[in-house]
Length: 131
Image 1 (tube, rainbow, N blue to C red):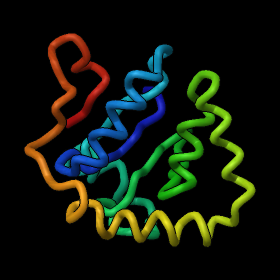
Image 2: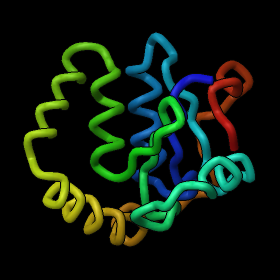
Image 3: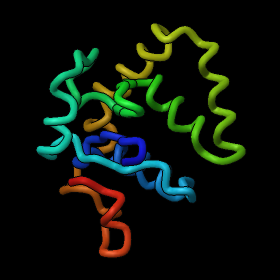
């Protein structure tokens, strides 16, 4: 399986981020997994996560889990030019990046709202999503 990206499929901001990544991921390196799915719960239960899963963007790559800003940087690193230039954010200490991330994560539903599941999924791309 490709790299797994776990996201809150009820969060508008999270869904917009997934839509953006999906459009840039021409080589189909990512499979998108709703955190609310049984598959996600099973896959993530053995990891000690820094935040509750529903408050984080999570990437699983080669059996390793990355959360928060580290997951986001790992993702952009795998996207084509110019997006992979986002790796420059590695120079910012993770404790600073993750404070900003946590602030946004804790306010995302209030600022951007909720929805009823991922709107991007259709018959054509269903193989790239686990909901």
